[in-house]
Image 1 (tube, rainbow, N blue to C red):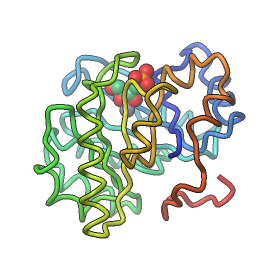
Image 2 (image 1 turned 90 degrees about the vertical axis):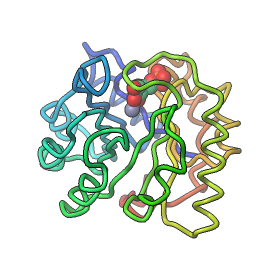
Image 3 (image 1 turned 135 degrees about the vertical axis):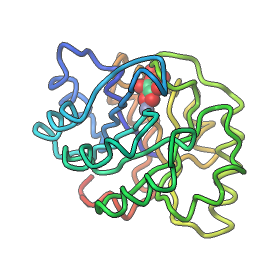
Length: 226
Ligand code: DX5
Ligand code: ZN
């Protein structure tokens, strides 16, 4: 399992230093939450923020769109330097959004909220490189994990392996050193962690406990040194 550091959990007055902290701990993926105040009851970053991160890091930028109308913004996020763009199944036009992300030359992720059943998204799996299972209601960092979501990850992993689909599994929300092993055992590939990374008292230890760099080599994570 690899960690994606969610900058929503960072100190907003020191985002460059927080980025360095994640990089120095060996974290290869930075997760950037985009919210519109409509799909979720909060507002976070925008395309210009993604562009600002792009200018200070060569790490993989994993952009999570919690937007009701992702089609309106996908091109701007691609131009801002996103390396992967994830849209929500519950938002407008999920299939068209995945196709547009591919047309722009990027891998595409599909995310589901805790109440969405996996059967609903199975027909869309051939159009995605990653499924992001929300393990909390999207919108805010620092919430406790919904333990039911772990069974969802295990069921999705079974399906992906059975159908031999090139799809990675990512989970987002409430992931900590104390529950990461259960998620890894369920077949999780990428653990998004905000509080768990940026409030860690010993980040190198957190990374060494959770990360297993040999566990997978996503074809889209281009830089072999990461
Ligand atoms: C929640 C966001 C998460 C958030 C996770 O809507 O999508 O990425 O930063 O934060 P923690 O790890 O603190 O639960
Ligand atoms: Zn997220």
